Each structure stands twice: as structure tokens, then as C-alpha cells.
Image (cartoon, rainbow, N blue to C red; front, side, top):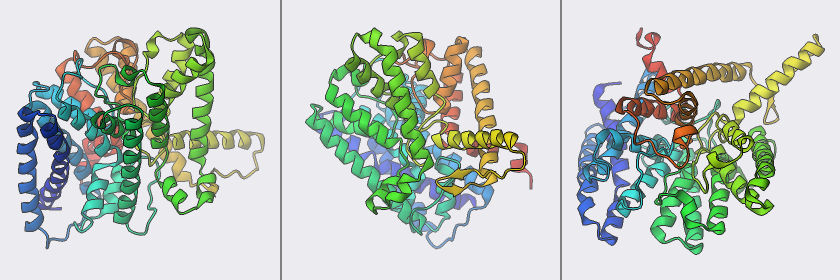
Amino acid sequence: MSIFSFFRIIFIVLATIGTAFLLPIITALCCHEEQVIQAFLIPMVASWILGVFFFLKGRKIQIKFSTRAVFIFVSSVWIFISLFGALPLWLSGAIPNFTDAFFESTSGFSTTGATILSEIESLPRSINLWRCEMHWLGGMGIIALTVALLPLLGVGSFQLIKAESTGPEKGKITPKMANTAEVLWFLYFGFTVAETIILQLCGMDFIDALSHSFSTLGTGGFSTRNSSIASYNSVLIEIVCTIFMFLSGINFSLYFYLILRKFGEIKKNSEFKAYLLIFGVVTVMLTLTLISHYGSLSKAFRYSTFQVASIMTTTGFATTDYLTWPNISQFFIFILFFIGGCSGSTSGGFKVIRWVILWKQSRNEMLRMLHPYGVFTLRVNGQPGRKDLVLNVGSFIFVYFVVVFVTTLMGTAANLDIFTSLTTSLTMIGSIGPAFGSLGPSENYGALLPWLKWWYCFVMIAGRLELYNMIIILTKDFWQR
């Protein structure tokens, strides 16, 4: 792929993101925040000019991606959009340090939800809306959005979306990848509208309702309030957020099958059944351990369900500080750091399907020990699984924990205690947000050393792209012919 073609698509993607600046600009006008309009307007117009120029200039050029080009392009897109998304935060003065602005932007697009801000409510509402909108854009995928809006780019959209999407297996739910992207984004938009309306009915104003819908559906966790969802002290709002966090952690393809009344596809989905089981079991166990802490079953269940949904789907919203809970309750939260949501959802983390595959393969190995001459097949979604799936998951585990250990080392080198550093590594790679120790749900990341923030930015993007896409570029083999 030529340099021109590379930057052509990069600037078209940036123009797409620039168009999303219209929403905070309108918000700034409505809320009389004229002082921040330029911070959005200048990058937006610049992205449009460059996007239109490159689109028209190269529209007759047929672009074909080599395997190496896919990895370079997808990684570059996420770096560029994180830099671009930081501009309004920095130019407006809301976050005057560019390192902090880039960290906030990367955390937004990667749906990590780790913030460097300690005072959020004093920010312009348009800036807070943009922080949450980044979650929404990054949740379903920037490239998927571009392919859905501009299917005539003439690029290998399936290769690109495959590299950006999550889970060990990627596929289409419609014959054309552009149509698949359109269906998924249509469902995503529908959920967002529904949650925004319901949150308004529960007492939020429109901007707060839209902002929290963006964060919930993108499973990001940024809020417009210092105390997150806890500041509303509303059971109804917590219930709505819990439901939509739970729904966002499910593979969006299943909603498409639901609309088509293909209930059999949902019923036999191994990951969905495991997701329900894990969610239910952890909620029950956590509730039982919190009854003595809160003094009532209803309160224990209220905080348990919300926090399980928040951490398991890697959203990171908070209604309480789980570091004040009993140690056994904290243990169940810690376990969720290793699980994540379903593949094909907006959730980050390890993904439930990988644990399903490991469990089934481990069971087969034990049965093989008991019956040496038996034939045991790994079955996923009612179908015989492939051997390469197990190898794929095994290698992913190795890479995942190597990155965790290296990132933990980086944290300890920056004077974080080892447990804080370990859980922060898990939260950065898994896009969770809050950690344990000195970076728990009531703290922020503003005091970290600048070089560690840049490392965490790399890890957040790598985690959002499921590690391989970023790490493979750093290997010697990638650059050899």
C-alpha cells in the first residue's frame, strides 16, 4: 500500500471523528460555552478539508491491504484518533498538559475509563460530553464506523474490522462486511437512544443522560460527576445502568439473531450461557458476603449487581468504593478483572469465550486421562471446535500475561506498590478503569509520572486491539521480507 493511500484512509477516518465534534459544539452553543467552541471547530474543519481532499484525490485508486499493511494501518488509526481526540481537551484548556490530554483521549477511545481528572463537574459540559462520546465511538470500533458510513472506500473492510474486533473468532452476520457494520451500529444507536430516554425519565437532564448512555453502551465509565453514578443516589438510575451494562457485555450479533427470530442461535451460544452463569454466580456470592457490611439483603444485592456489571463488562462506573468492602468481597471483584465480557461486545477484558474454550479443553484432557482410547471433541456453540482455537487461546494467554508482567514492572519502577501496579496493569490491558490500592475507584491517574502515562496509553490501545496488532509491529519478523 502506498504512502498516499495510507494517509488517504487515515484522514478520512479523522474526518469521520471530526464530524462527531458537532455534538459538543452544539452543546457548547446551548450551554453558552463559546470559549471552547474554537477548540472543537478548528480541528473539525481541518479534518474535513484534508478528508475531502484525500477522498476526491484518490477515489480512482483501488486499495489492497497486504497482511502487514492491515496491522500497521489499524494500529496507526487508533494512535491518530487518540491524538486527534486529545486536541479539544488540550486546546480548550480543560486539560492544559498534552500528556494528560492524550491519556484522557486514549482512555476514552479504548473505553478504559481511567481519568487523570480530580474535578470533573467544573469542566464545560461540552467537554464532558466529548469525553463520554469517545467511549461510544471507540466501543463498537472506529474502523467499523467508517466502513458503515463509507462502504465505497474500496478497501478490504473485512480484514480491517477483523483486526479491530475482539474475540478469538471473527465473522460476518451478513454477506457483506459493510452491511454487517451498518447492522451493528444501527443496533448500537438504538440502544443508546433507548437508554438516554429512560435515564431522562429517571431524573437526569438530557446532556447527562446522553453522556452516561455513551459511557454505558461503550462500556467505558467516564461520568459527568465526580462521584460517578453514586452522585445521583438513585436506585432507578442504577438499575437502568446495570441493565444496559449487562446488555452491552453481550455479543451484538445475538441481538441481530433475536430480531430475525433465530432463537436457536442464541440458545446454543456457549459464550452467552457462560456469561449468564458467571454473572449470576458472582452476584450471588458477592451479595452474601456484603449482607453483614450493609445490614440488609436488598442493599447488598443493589451494590453487588451494579458492581459486578460494571467490572465484568469493563465499564468502570462506581456507586461505592469497593476497597471499603470486606476482603472476601474484594476477592470476587478481583476475579472479574480476569474475565471481561463476550467477544463481539463493546466490553474489554479477556473475554468469556476464551475461558469457555479452556474449560472445555481441560475437561477433555481429564477425560482422555481416564479413557486413553476415547475420542473427545471440543464443541463450541453446539459445533465441533477446531484445534487451532485452543492454540489461539493458549498463545493469547501467554502474550496477555507477559504484557501484564512487563506493565507491572513499569508501574513498580514508577514507585507504585506491587499490588496497585498489578491491578492497574490488568485494568489498562482489560479496559476496566478503576484498580486496587492507591488507584482504586475513588482515585485518579493524574499523579502518575509522565513516562508511565505514555506507557499506559500504549497498553490501552494494545489491549483494545487484543495485543497482537500492536505488539507484532515491534517484532523483528514483522519487518523481514
